[in-house]
Image (cartoon, rainbow, N blue to C red):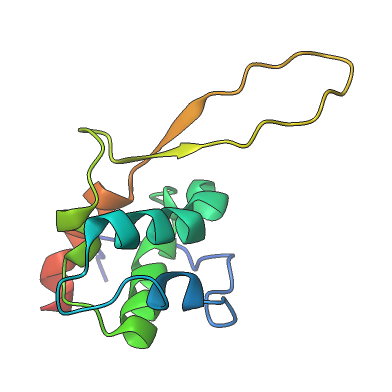
Length: 123
């Protein structure tokens, strides 16, 4: 059997995540971007490496649970939350000094692009 989109199971447990970060701030019917997008980033940025791994189904699983608990319209975050062509940027928190001064930088979050790929599957 041939599979076109084969991906490994996500190592992150999305079933036990706390989705109130998003559901308490991102409210319809307007779903204001200034409330929805920061809430989405707060939830997703800590696990961005797992979500952005194209070898796993983490992004698909995450959006399935977000939509299950939040009952958001399809494509909400992809349409409302944009920070450039590479997706959302997760600002890493400044680490306390530990002997060496490491540069802290922004890492792009490619969830927007990933969600656009998954959007037709949800319709």
